[in-house]
Length: 514
Image (cartoon, rainbow, N blue to C red; front, side, top):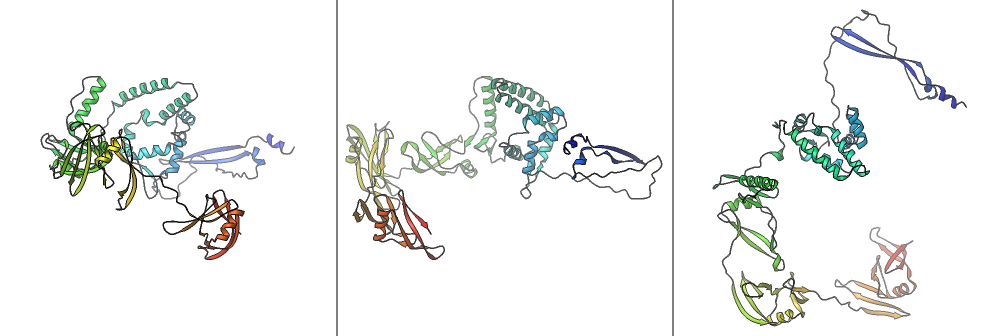
């Protein structure tokens, strides 16, 4: 009953007084407060209040007894760090004064989502609108960011309310109150109106981000006096940029497309036939313009992904072409009739290395099948068997380590290539040490002379198990009882012996220490 009376204590009532004092051209404000009724705070012992009583003042009662007038500067607020700036984005409504905008941002739960706010900040950094110090991780606006904000002042683009508006629209789509098509059309209409509005603004910037500055001129083509520059994906000249602009305009207006002109070289070169390893560099480009020959590695897709190095140069129109090397090879061509078809067998030596291939489908319009596979040249009699769908097993293929290995040759008509596969490994038999009572123990020796045992063909036990050398008697107990206690396991880490029990669990052996 005593606690219930607190509900009737009423509000806390204070009388506040503000005194404005004018001294010369300066005005000073002083605030006083006197509590008239403690109200509900009587029930809150922790609540403390102290009256600030102002003296009775009349005009002329204040005299200046002396003192100095000191000029000081206000302290700027602390710079944002990633955590605090993320919180600002989440609670952006607190930064706004307009009540409608505040309400809209509250509904939208800030700018972005927890999963996208980091991306927003990274985008602002990428486009050099803000920067983050590496030492203190403090954000600050760049000169370009400040200037852009000033030029967009008064535009929807500079107001968080725009984000709130579209966030609210997206929520309406999610709630089924608005269809995606209607929202899409609204966005398109808004963008058109926004672009018309922005087109009337002044965009002569005093500060420009690095990415918008003209690219460094790498080379000037003498014939056209056009400057060559570098982009992320290639190299281009000013005439090519004009062509691209006209091409986009023609596509937009559905008019005839302009003829290609200008210079462009992609950094990567790949098509259905080949793929170049790596990229063209600025150094490569300058060498090509200086009529030098460069060398690049290529993978030939139509020839079983065979790799080779090829020389390249620019022709008179600055188009990239392959350099045909002088034929320094000595070869022999035999015309054969294999598997009911005409086949040419070509062998020879080039750069001190022998080669061989078969040409099928005619001398002029046919295709080549490489005949040298892992150091072995497939002879015509064997190739005929492959064409008939048979396989050939050999054990004299040569590895990169110059060791022989076995393999199986076959011919793939779809890939137009001789394929090499490996025979299935046969399980080697171990030495049977025990075969009684339905249990079997086999001993195996690995290539590095380590010894292991197979219990019942499935459970593997190494001779050295947890620092203990297993003997046959222990293995017999383990395979028949499924566990064995041993008192001299050895810990390398602790450098001491310890007891434990080996237990067979499934196809593994586990140790249970005491």
